[in-house]
Length: 326
Ligand code: SF4
Image 1 (cartoon, protein in one colour):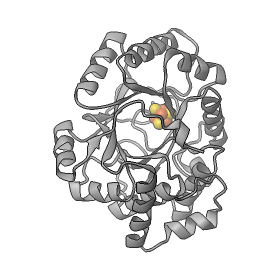
Image 2 (cartoon, helix red, strand yellow; image 1 turned 90 degrees about the vertical axis):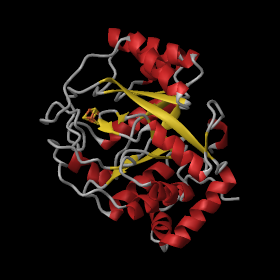
Image 3 (tube, protein in one colour; image 1 turned 45 degrees about the vertical axis):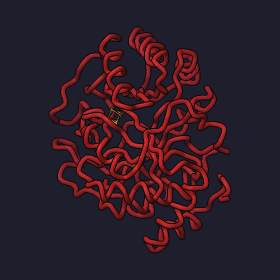
Image 4 (cartoon, rainbow, N blue to C red; image 1 turned 135 degrees about the horizontal axis):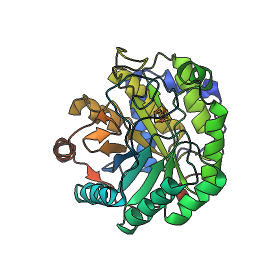
């Protein structure tokens, strides 16, 4: 059985990452079998509860107020609208419901209180509730936990050196501090990154190294392929290839064996054959629903057909992930 380690060196991860692809997939698939039911894929729905108008300058994001994109700023959604969306998500097979707001950080105000109401309502429906609300203090993380939050998403996006080339309004350390606060509140951590932003293999390795050497591995690791949106500084970038995605997913699977590795943004134009390769390489979670925050995603009917074809089942909610992670 592969060991869960948080003392990986960068050169060890580099060696895995550079393994010939077929061998890498085989190795990742072997680790996957040791820790997971390979017939199960977690299906998560992501809802943007507060869209656009964000003061941050993340170069990949159409929700930044600094870029002229087709995303308009909207106020925080109403509780009943969120409940309706969560019911639809549950009916179409999602077991995790993630709510995202385009905030630099959560502020302790009425909007925050409304989010806690949303968490309570969605939690009572038996869904695992996840939020992504920007930077959090320890106190805010605790309040969210008390409201019934299961997981918090806060991505590191890329390696530390590349980070300042894509975002200038906050630091890598700010991200790590929020991740620490989330851990202190005993929330499940969802943290990953994006490829195809112009970063080098070394930057990708830096990201994987940071994730795999956190005091505890994130329970969920989303791997995104950049969706280059018109109006953002990333407009016109070519999408990462499936081989780059597979290499990234497989390496993440090997160095963080018990984590859920999520095939996230960029899945929309992947044929089933490419998605199947990602599942073979150790991905065991996807986002469902027509939109991923503001960018298009796969239709749930297409996903159902894919699950049928590949013999996959949606994973049930509330299986304890936390206990399996070192
Ligand atoms: S990624 Fe998040 S923090 Fe960055 S601009 Fe978009 S909404 Fe704001």
